[in-house]
Length: 73
Image 1 (cartoon, helix red, strand yellow):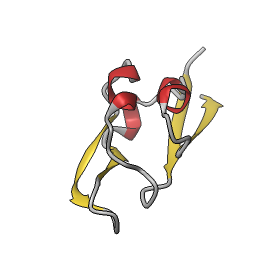
Image 2 (spheres, rainbow, N blue to C red; image 1 turned 30 degrees about the vertical axis):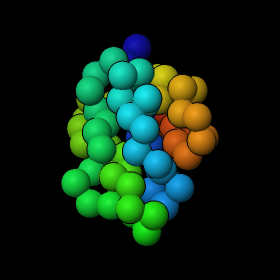
Image 3 (spheres, one colour; image 1 turned 180 degrees about the horizontal axis):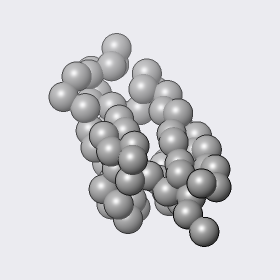
Image 4 (tube, rainbow, N blue to C red; image 1 turned 90 degrees about the vertical axis):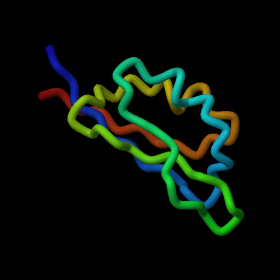
């Protein structure tokens, strides 16, 4: 059974620590080249097709700024 995931990221509260990036098994996320109002490069979903909604990124995020949605396909 396959799963499709997507993320909702609170970019204004992301401090760009990058902890979540190591947790992603499919390299779906990366830090953006742009910065938020606080001057941090924030997290963005760069490969939505590969996201399986495993929620590893949300679990390791120290600020809890990532919401994960998962659906069966």
